[in-house]
Length: 64
Image (cartoon, rainbow, N blue to C red):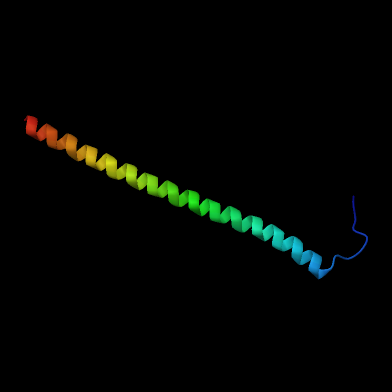
């Protein structure tokens, strides 16, 4: 098993942590954007479906 020969400095450790954190933040922002987009699409689809249902019901009432 590989073992480090010397202690890693705080600066080096912080650089590596920050690189990892930047990747995580980027993924979190992307996930939020995708979820908001999906929610907006589902809202628009539901409003279209509701308007279609209303127009179908109205046309059925006028036929009777």
